[in-house]
Amino acid sequence: SPFRLRDSPRRNHAGFCRNTLTVAVTAANGQVRNYVVTLNVAALSNNTSLASLTVAGQSVVDGGTVTVAAGTRSVSVVANVADSNAWAAVTGRSNLIAGSNTVSITVTAEDGTQRVHRVTVVVAALSNNTNLATFTVNGTAVTNGSTFSVESGSTSVAVVATTADTEASVAITGRTGLVAGNNTLTVRVTAADGTVRNHVVTIVVLALSNNTNLSTLTAPSKHFSHSGLQRPRHGRIAEQAIPCVA
Image 1 (cartoon, rainbow, N blue to C red):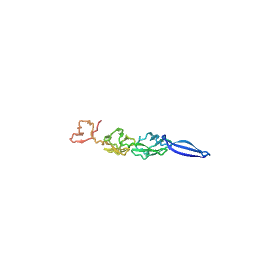
Image 2: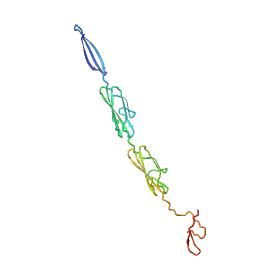
Image 3: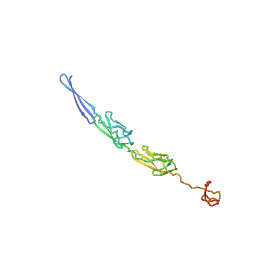
Image 4: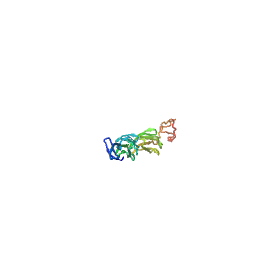
């Protein structure tokens, strides 16, 4: 028997698309009978949620903040959508700068609905620490601005300078080529952010002695005076070397 189909789709309050399927059957004698079937077809999902989100290995939520080490240029982002029919796109995870950066995760639902999840990534500033954890000259601890004396004739000193920040660098000048008197020893510390500080110590090389004094002088005869001169019987003064008895 001949029949006709009529489809009238409507969306109901449950989010389903309601379809009415009508089958019209016409008998040989012309009598018509309608068979009506209601079909509820699930609508496309508008779920834009994330089941989980990690940035730089740290679990975070929409609007959260993640802090990373100084000098970090990019972070890893793992975004798992709650609906398997949705998909996510990530922007802003690379070319990071010191301070605040925004990483965006745009989730597009099955029905085209979109939501942007944002996370602030804070890159710590580079350190400006120019301090020294250790500073010694010839094994003795010294400080910036101090004075250190060494024996006469010294031409160099041993210097140990360790930065307080492992990212800082150090350069030492003036530890060799020393001369008698004052010499300047400079330890130049450059911090991670480029800040520079000079730690200066004055190295004093003692002068060679000009001491010509005698610690002891003895005369073996009454003919010797304290001046070391001997008066002969005829009245003339003669010079004579006098041994120094220790």
